[in-house]
Image 1 (cartoon, rainbow, N blue to C red):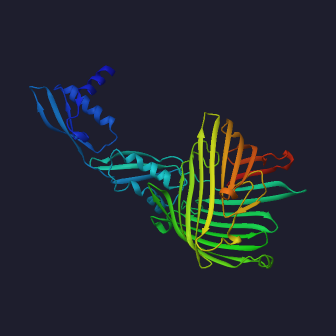
Image 2: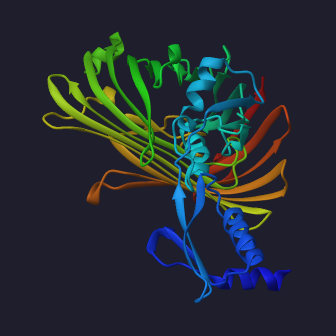
Image 3: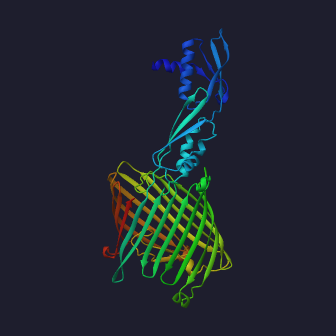
Length: 445
């Protein structure tokens, strides 16, 4: 049988480009039927038809014309593993509607995987005839919503005393069956520094084909000033730029009495925001393969002057084998004013568990910084892993370059309901007694 199939494929020759015609060098009825069956089965495009074009009895060949009917779906059935409102489901599978079924049809699922945060893999589908003239499809959706309550607690030594810092995040997904999420984040560095963030994201509000995101940021820094910022974004999708958010933000900075004594000023700012996000990680909490990046640009006005700031958060996960994975990360932030010096209240703070491990929370500040991280992860099983890591930060340029390096070890364990991680890090070259312990935990809701 295998030799017979090879003979059939050998008898097929293409006369003209683009597979518009196919010639079978045989006039045997069985060979012709088997050849056409092989061609149909080997092509995923079910809209193709083979019409007899010409033949030659003397020269022993028959020629068929390949015709693409450019068939579209008449009916779509949706089967979702998680409850989502029907009007939202219709927007999610909208790419499948009024699209010609050809060899690129299966790529639509990959586009959905890139567009929505809750898909870890492309949705599967099945095509079939509803009746003789109507084509239908079943789209199998398997969204991964992960509502959770998480936190990070750090213990580090500052001089002769120990500092306790912490942050808590309540993250709720698909709460109202709209595939959106709601996030409340709180961070306490000390009694003088706190952060509160609120985020609401809806991919298809009111059944629209675009999403919206609303953010509110409130921060008190070292008892010197308070920052309030509001942001509104439209969520779009581009095949080339992935998830694209376009919007506007505005905010105010109010110095405290102590801050005014130190020459901190009241500032109002507003900006146009543009960002691109891609997430192809195989798992949001224990990723072993894939890429995540967020690239954002903001341009606007502060203190009657134009400013520009940007952010790049890039993560690359690469499996060496079934037990060893590598993680490379680059975090870059910067702000530039075209006319004036950057106000002190617009500096970026970094250091601590989420940026530069081994150092105290918000230990450093700068108008721009870049942090490179490297992690080598050993997993004895899918639920437990050991990590060795190095973080290296740069601030300034050329002769005013500052560098900081933190190294450490961590262990983490995952269950169906929780993730817990312990990390101990210290500045490179320092005594092990000068390190910081970070405890990260996450509980699925």
